[in-house]
Image (cartoon, rainbow, N blue to C red; front, top):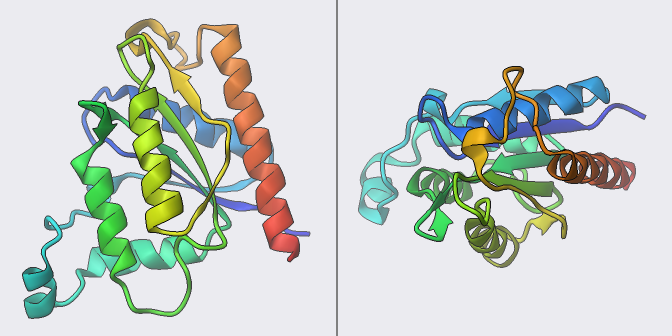
Length: 191
C-alpha cells in the first residue's frame, strides 16, 4: 500500500504566524511517519474575493483550479486555522469557496479526511474558530473531519526555538491527531 498523500496548509500568510508554525510542525511529523506531504502556502495561490459576478464574467481563477487539482490528488488535509473574532480567516474561507466552484473532475472535499488545528495567543487556542471550520467542511462541503482537533493556547510562548511545542499535553494531542489522520487516510485509500 502506498503512503498517504497529505496536504498541510495554514489559513494565514502573515509573517511569524503561529498557525504557520503549527502547520510546519505537522508537516515535519507527518514526513517522519512516511506520509507524502505537500506543505502549501496560500500566499502562492492568490485569489480575488469570491463574487458570483466576477465568476460569471471571468470564470474560476487558475489558482483555484490548481488548488482543486492538489486537493483531488491527495488523501487527506491538515488545516491550521487562525481564529479571527471567534471565526475563521477570510483568506481560508475564500480559498475553500473558490475551490468548490471548480467544475473539473474529482472531489476536493468528499472522500478526503480533514484534520484541524489552531494556535492562538488566547487561552482557548483558536477552538471557537475550529468549530466554525468544522461546520463549513462537514455541512457545507461534505468533508470527513476527524472528531479530535488540536488547539494550542498561549501560542506566543507555546513553541521553543526549534518550533516544537513546549507543552507535553498539547504535543501529545497533536501526535494523536496526526496518527488518526494517517489511520483514516489509509482506510480511505484501501476502499
